[in-house]
Length: 157
Image (tube, rainbow, N blue to C red; front, top):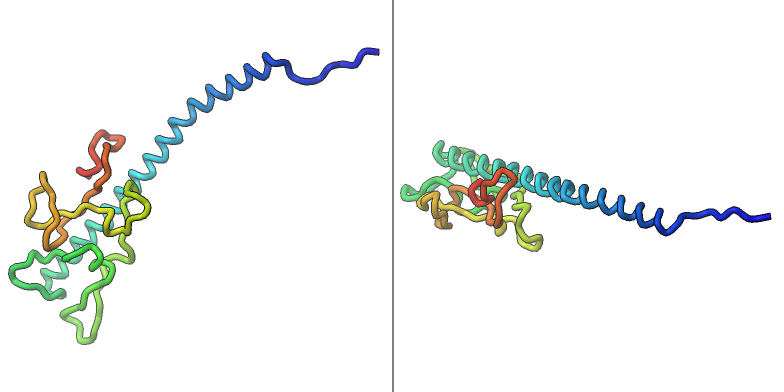
């Protein structure tokens, strides 16, 4: 009595591996696209949080809640001030005003950098075309190279 042979032939295995390779090559770009999209969403949210905090600091300064010299713009001297807080000039006690719980980091920056070093800073007296740091922080921008999925460079977000 002959025994039936069970198993796959070499051709069946090669065809199966080829089909899996084609499927994997189609899925990999989609996965990379999803990762980039998630980082871009995180970047937009981080920029919005920081810019809202900068505006809130400026408003508090304009309202007289934060003491400032007459020759200053009213924007914070650094990003860390937004987290550390400042003394409320209108408060009767040592009351602090906080603008951020924590400083978000640029998701495209190197992992070892502290959050305040991941952002490019623009001072109030620098032009938008050539942002540079100064005595205050008027705006922040990503220092990441490259462009977003919409074609706009990350530095211009």
